[in-house]
Image (cartoon, rainbow, N blue to C red; front, side, top):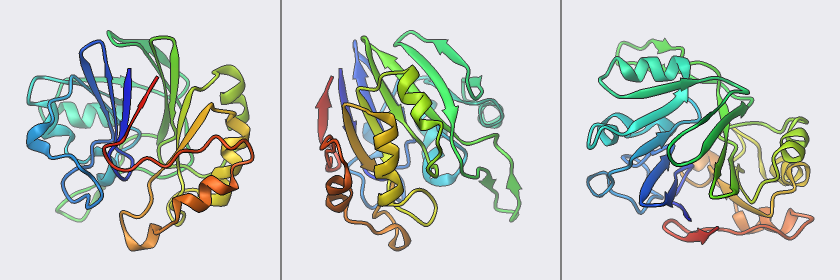
Amino acid sequence: MKVSYHGHSVVKIVTDGKEILIDPFITGNGNTDLKVENESPDFILLTHGHGDHVGDTVQLAKKKDALVIAMVELANYLSWQGVKTHGMNIGGSYEFEFGKVKFTQAFHSTGVETEEQTIIYTGMPAGLLITIEGKTIYHAGDTSLFSDMKLIGERHPIDLAFLPIGDNFTMGPEDAAYAAKLLHAKTVVPIHYNTFPVIKQDPGRFINLLEDGNGKVLQPGETIEL
């Protein structure tokens, strides 16, 4: 299995010939190496409804009828746009063709901003626990630090964790480092930073804060094999 990072919170998983994209914010993402015209995922996983996470989901999903897996309200909203979806909720898990997905809590906000200057509620924000080929990946989504991360790590031994460090909208480096301590993941990768001026961070500083020395900064397009 190959897991790659593509700027902001975009993660790609390739397993058994299937491609999974998490939070595919490509158009407007100055830090990504991806181009929408080159991507044809089989599955899309979403943590919440903000535009910098839903991103190009609808266009990408329609390329080859990809299944979009999201919180049920967000899934319903996307289904109205002609996308095939599977709705889930916090604490629930489901076995898909590629592996198992479980939605965890995250502390953030969520919603789609419309051209009419209204906000459509798209369910709770979430993190993702993805178990494939006997390995578990945790994508925390957008979240603050919360104590139940310790429980997540104890209940689901994590091989690879993606944690936001940008501050302002999510955890900053210090809180994210404490989150890593609670999770005890084998490898921790920082995400959700440097896309906008307000979330400018030095990922190397975050790595230096990790007590377990288990951090790795991935450049856009760089891959980890699990």
